[in-house]
Length: 420
Ligand SMILES: [Zn+2]
Image (cartoon, rainbow, N blue to C red):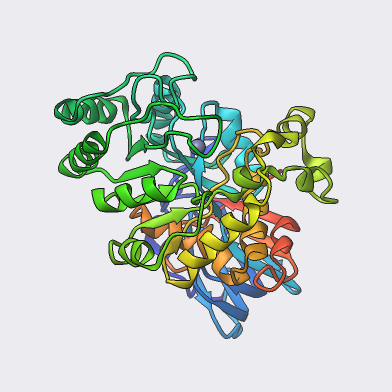
């Protein structure tokens, strides 16, 4: 019997604790290792033309970047990666996730982690957190959540039911503490008076925005802000927030603002899927189209009214200005808002990024390593020894043809092959 080269399982995999039916312990399991051989590898950062990646239990236990022959356990499962590309599981940096089936559906499309930017979903988040205590769920994406956004009376976000609101800057600290008590992993702030859309509505004052960002940081949380025009962006940058969701849609920001964003190491999640509202492309997609439910297709038909005459080019030009300056770009679908759907839309988001002018490799980074790094997750987002075996195997070369991310062959969540 050949010796195992890979060390993860040496001690712990022998202690064969049976994992719970739908959860996987990172270091203990009774299943054999899996080796994906001769595969094109996008490791979250760069492309390696031919490699072998070994999964043991929930983790990546070994990578041969030159695809040299590996001594594997005799019971190892071999997956021939010839003609295929292995990617880290996709991360959607902007969703509104409030039901378990949305996380299951995300995984069906290779999305292994989602960031919920607020869904008024305290009980749901608590339920998922309770599940997570049993180990890593393997039948759904992982959830990180803002639970409830910070917004002003009559502002965006108050139309979705009973939402607490904030007016005075001196109340910001207690308000943020309440969101953390709700279970927020980070603080999501709405700062948008909708002057670009249906006429102006109230939003937080600039002073209150500043106070909320400071309160979030004082209480150890990131501050992520929803804004869509250059004036709001400028205030958010001045406030020292960690990132922005929605690309600006009124005009391309000037160089000083972009330089400040870059200097402050802020991220931008452009959410082109919402801005363009072009979900029909997924309905017409030969691979994804047949996978969609009637409800998902209906959702993708979307909010066509959101598309503004000439707007698309501003959105693309603004994204390219940020991208060109080296600002961190995160892929986020803003699903399930009109024109998007859970899971599938992140693939279109990457395609829209490439259509705007981004290199396909950078679009892949935006949906893998970049969101993991931006939110401080060191266990995922890359294919590296010791990281979570959240993996997506696709036909073709998505680093050259981004739509190849849809040609899904296999999905692994925490080392468990997902049947989609
Ligand atoms: Zn959103």
